[in-house]
Image (cartoon, rainbow over all chains, first blue to last red; front, side):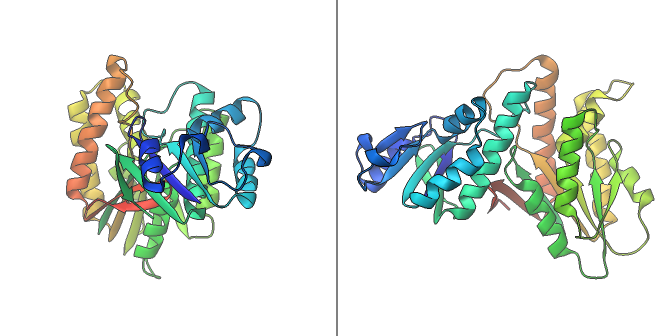
Amino acid sequence: MKLVIGGTAQGKLEYVLLKYDVQKNMVWDGVLPNDRKLNGNIVIINHFHQWVKSRMASGGCPEDEIMSFLDCHEDCIIISDEIGNGIVPIDPFEREYRERTGRILVQLAMRAEEVERIICGIGQKIK
Amino acid sequence: MMVLVVGGSGSGKSSYAEKTAVSLAQVCMKKYYLATMQVFDDEGREKVERHRNLRNGKGFFTIEQPTRISGALEKMAVGDRTVLLECISNLMANEMFSEEKAMTEMQVTENVIRDIKMLKAQTNHLVAVSNNVFEDGITYDETTAKYIQAMGKMNQKLAALADRVVEVVAGIPVIMK
């Protein structure tokens, strides 16, 4: 698994599409694909942070769910915004969302074979 | 030496800062954890508990010091010491918003820097944790905006004082200085 992170609108998806020469139809936006739709193609999950938020909102456990997903699909690219670099929000859900997303990214970074951080469309390999 | 560790919410900065403090401290050196967070509710208590568990068994002596951070020196034993200060963002908020006599953010920044210089001078190793609170693109009310400005100045001054500056991104240390 490869992890690609960075601020919003930094060109993360474009960077990934160009670097790995893949088509947009392999990109899953804010959702995890189910097995039948994959046909062995490489999986790109874009806006991973939004998936975390939606799983939290519906009472899921994104921490466990993403790890189980990776157990079956180790060969994927996860793209996520970094959302923790701001003032701690007053709203408890927003606060928890930032914390949990941050911690999940720490876990993913540990598991990833490569971590890149994208700024101004430029990738910086940090692992 | 002095190390400044910065990062966002859930970035893994605490865990990294702790490891750094433990690796800097030699065996016979006392390790102190300066806790700046004031606890008001269950969420605060849970956070403190989580951090306590992280530090568990690593031999830190905890000093609660929500304001006037150099005051912690009076509570330490004489001799060699490594200090982990967590975190600057709470300390700044406490100094700016809970003092009875209102000070300007400039005065607060100067006072805190003076305090941290004292800490640095009287410890073998100082590891300070600070937050990146600068990148959410939101325009805040005047009070919060002043806090952000003060934090920005603070981090710059700390980085100038520090021998090493590390940004923690998804748990990965990125060396800045």
